[in-house]
View 1 (cartoon, rainbow over the protein chains, first blue to last red):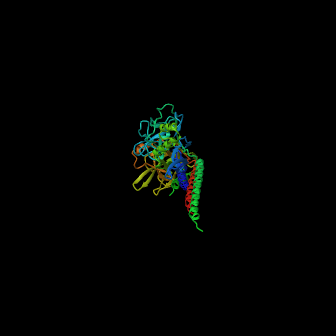
View 2 (cartoon, chains in turn blue, purple):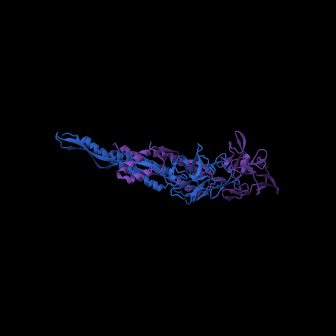
View 3 (cartoon, rainbow over the protein chains, first blue to last red):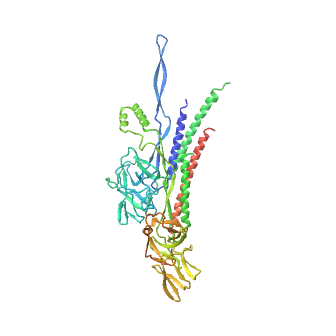
Length: 275
Length: 295
């Protein structure tokens, strides 16, 4: 039996999915606050192959056949893309000179996988998190993300700027018209728990460690820069290289598949040839 | 169609829009009082692709460890999902899109022209008023562009207009007009227009200068003008207020477009376009490989 047929096919499918992830990273190479996705490949669980044999035991009536089993080793049944993990690392800052652009800079964080986020509200009124500080002011004077989601203050309310000019201090306090509004910032001790949603928003997954207020937590340092945005942390050169790699891997799997096809062809056309 | 091709082609269309905006900025490098615009991207929606369920993986993991010994089994039990770091499923994006355009309201450089009808506003967010005739009657528009002209009217009067021929409003909210036998004119620092007739100088009009208290509420009306949005919750007075402006005559505020920044942005956008194009051609070659399977 040609078991490798499906192994090669699954390799092609996994590589195609990998390509989708890389292509999405490249598309978002200039999206502020975007965190690149890393695809992880995983082998399908191994199968144990056992020998199914019969052993003859000599008996008086001429013999008894007993089935015996013997392990002969394991077989991989292919590969699939297991998950995409966003790479949470600080992006570079880019100066825009526009006062509604804010960049969040991580300082010292207590956890290895910890990460800081702006608090925003999605269409359904739920609390979500983002790193895209490319904000704007809407028609009613509220500070919103570039998709129109409200940016929240530390009490969870939308921030009313009244369309006025405002200054943001390093510690994230918006000074507008004499009032000081602290921006809502959250800290996730394990950022891998977060589920990536559309429009650069993140939501905590089902079993996530709850996010904490970044101002209350111990040993959390951050910095807010006004007039800057955080660039995407996609490395185009790396993404391109991985893409080439994935392509070649896809090609090799295709070759293997063809080789199997040729073996099958031999079986069909040559083995049964008469004369 | 291949998902990565969709992602890349969608993004290419959006990058094209960014290039349009950069092109518009570069085209207005020499427009007096022009404020540059900047476009930023946002990632598009994500689609969850359900993968092998967690239970399946855990069972498999237990199966693995069962063969390796009891010690590992314990380790596997402690760590419920040993192979997953993230929530279930694969979230696959659909590319990027242009999110919004932001206006850079910073002041442009001042250029000396020695033309007495060129006036530059010296303070941020100060604006000249123009009278525009629309379908709904007269409307006041605002501009930073101070290259004015005098247009003769039929009744022997001269009308102060902007480069498009729209009347410039004075302090009283009326178009500024003078009798036409003018020997010379001069605009003072406070916006008063001094007219010289037979060697005698007198203030005959005052430029109406307003301050935008909420500059981001103003809506671009084209031709380098701004207007009050129709649906603003805050009344006009809250957005615009009269101001004692400081002006400089014989000077013009040039556009605040930074050509080197625009060129850099253009190069970046073009490269992004190329990367996405490459992503499409790679996907296409992969499709080619699939079709070659049966050759």
